[in-house]
Length: 92
Length: 136
Image 1: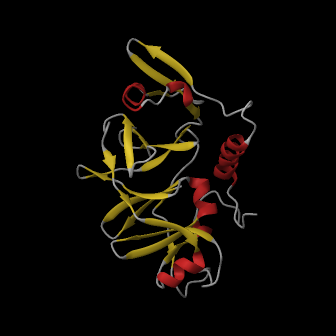
Image 2 (image 1 turned 135 degrees about the vertical axis):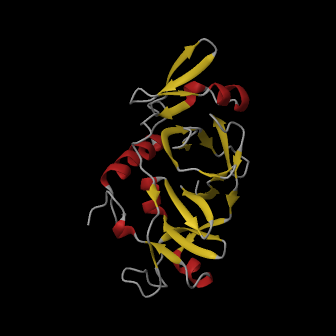
């Protein structure tokens, strides 16, 4: 599943990352700040905190699109594109 | 075949994906579960305990069904990823057929190649004053 979620809650900004766990082959995320676990429950929008400080709270999901670059660029002519060459841990 | 390759995250994710697609009889490694008093924990490969009592009791997520437990630092997110814009060296041609996750937040458009995002799982981003996680 590919999606875009807010990282803001109660005026705080969370840093989300993979927890190293999956459930039903879907990644379980966690936040650095509280180590709460976040999961996209089937049939729901957004991320739900399934365990931790923010239990039962949700992070809003923004619209996103899984598509070909050519189609995305045609609709978003000034779109930014991830600078892959600058990412850590990548071969040149 | 992927054009770009990240050793550590892709290798780990390959384990996840290959195991997910494998014969069900072998299956992914499921969690070691510990119960202490009235709490339920899953223990990952680093020895870290994660309390999943609430997940189990309120969302029906059985502790024994959590998978892999690679540890919280096994897959690092992308933080404040630099972007390329039209005219920048390396900006893809308009007719490139790269599979991307496109996001438009606060009127700002960005695209993330799926094959790269897969290796990091999350890109923690800021679109204007909106802090978001682009997740695969």
